[in-house]
Length: 266
Image 1 (cartoon, helix red, strand yellow):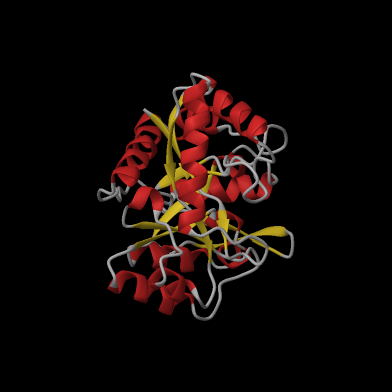
Image 2: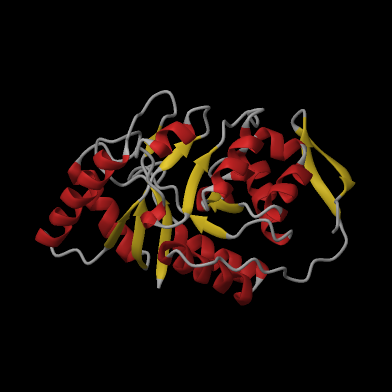
């Protein structure tokens, strides 16, 4: 089963589907690409959109009703992409936060330009209440691009990382694509989501990207991502597998160009 763990398919919620009609087209396309189930993850608390748990659950129920009426056999789970901010714990305590399919996994979006000073404290507080942070598209974060060893530290502390299929297909440029594949090779990516937003520029391409991963990194790696997606929506422990990794130079990006430095092998 192919499961998309990150998708902005719910209509009129954020910068994703702009109408029910577009959401239905996205659903049909997902099925055509082999996706059987997905987690709808509207943006929350990113300074532009506020989508609390009740609002999302209601939207999912309406969308599922429309899918059933049109005979579209796509399983839709409720989730949320939570922008990292100082009030995440307050929102959790007040019931505004929605984990992925009501599991222990919470999808977090970092600012693209860096990592807030309070992020480590937030991760600790989430672990205290037995929630597992999932960092969305770490390959697009400027801090990780500059200091990739920071991402390894987070992974070793128990954080899960979810890459975006559009990064791996080059939608965000060749540098991001190379970095995303390097993170996969370095065993720092646990699951891949489409982060689909629309039917044009950000259409879901998860199936194709997994085929590309299969061709470049092997069948075992592609199967690993498939299995972890299934474990995630069931609320089970994600596999943290280390594939054979040769000692290598790390490709990093600084001031728009690549430079080489020793990768920290542990």
